[in-house]
Amino acid sequence: MHDVLLIKTWNDMNRLSEQARYVPELPRNAELLRITGIRLQRIHFFDDASLDVREVLSQVRTPLPLDLFFKHLSVTAKQQLFMWQMQRVLALPGSYSLNLSVRMLTCPSWISRLTKQTHQGRIVIEIQDPGTMMRLEKAEQQAVGIAIKTLVRHGFRVWLDDVSPELFFVWRLSGIRFDAIKIESGMFHQFRSSEWQLRVLVNQFRGLGERIVIEGVETAQDYAICRMSGADAVQGFFFEQETVLKGLNHC
Image (cartoon, rainbow, N blue to C red; front, side, top):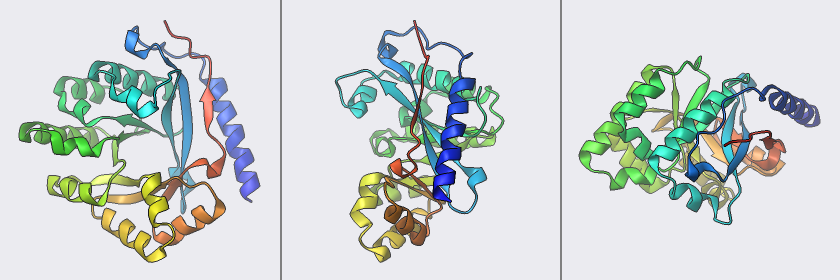
């Protein structure tokens, strides 16, 4: 059954590549010249595959570690990249998650522009750097909360990525309830050997969001452990379906 699922997924992804030809080019921004394409990685929900989402990741030509490359991008460049990625994947069927930094949420004019985009409820916004919330001024933190509530009101689902037990309390105090919380790969592998500890972690994080997604699933055993943990979905190389959408020639 799993082999059939993988074949179907691979065929679906090939169809996505075929349908991705007639879309906007990447904005003319020198900071974005090293971005050569988009990678899609599946997020699979255990109980209802119709909820599955594909995370939109950038294919980058750079000697730098990817986290360092994106750390040095200006907020403007990140905003342009986000809009371009969203327009690109909305030309395809299905639901997609796009990464967004906390500081992007402190720009009311950009949030207003984002809410004007037609997306049919198919876009998930992943806040990728939850630790930044601790470094913001109180007014900026309030702006983040307002932005998230505004996006939800306009049909976007908002997820919180890379949450740690320490950051859990920071975001709990914000009073924001997320559609989903993601447990990053390193934390999963830290706790995977203890079914009890992983279940406690999942239950704790459910205090922030309706659903829990575990990253870093690479084997059938990882998959089984996550399913037993009480999590709702998984993401990782276990599905063997990371795909590059090619033909993204930009200026």
